Image (cartoon, rainbow, N blue to C red):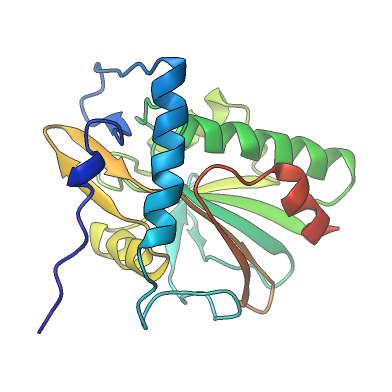
Length: 213
């Protein structure tokens, strides 16, 4: 018997990620943001890994996506380690996609400063592929000052993104014009092996950098 996909409904009033309506926005006060982040961590840890999901030491899926330039890209690079995460450009919840973007900006600055461009790259994969096409991702990357030599963005078909979210145990749920989702960041080595997966938003850039040096 096929199991139903776990629902986020029990934390829906708090676990609101971002509106799929471009003009809509969400605000969180300090207490709700802290509670939101805590619940996210609890939820991600409480859901058991399935046999077909990626774990530390597994191989990353061999899937071809499109980057912000419209060029083919994969989850791993044969020359560099890849730090990848999931976001979408219309996300308005500060503790989620914007926080991931902030952490990646910090990683980008450190990679540039320490001369690690030849050894590491960053990849943000959209959870909203129907809206986040390459041209949109390019505009977004420029708006947040992403250096394409270090940090790229990727999209694909809905089927491809659904497959990736299942592989990496990222739960998504669209309801009433809002996309709810959990967070996952992973370090993938040039040979395609997944060295480390971080869930939630509590990981620190320095922790990732220590593995890249």
